[in-house]
Length: 100
Image 1: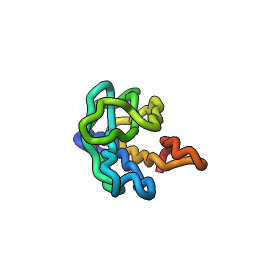
Image 2 (image 1 turned 120 degrees about the horizontal axis):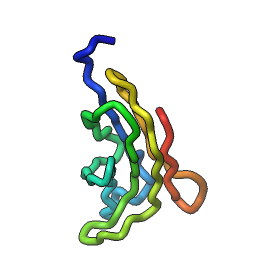
Image 3 (image 1 turned 180 degrees about the vertical axis):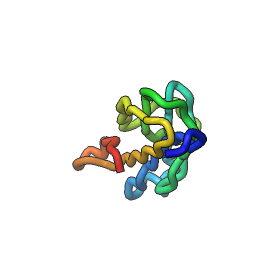
């Protein structure tokens, strides 16, 4: 990779059935900074090489409560593009955040 290659982290929150229809808003948090998301569309951020804390969850509009949070620490190498996907796991709708 070249020295000027961009280092990025993408997080996609997959649609959770009826949640999108009932006003649930996906949110991505990387290193304590929140980024509004859209169901099924990646949030792509430029990051410094190193470890980053990524978290995905949803909340209902007007609420600050995190619903079904899933997080992990991910190591990103210079010039790398890391892709993560948050998917519902099981019947309770809890999210699981994994590398894509």
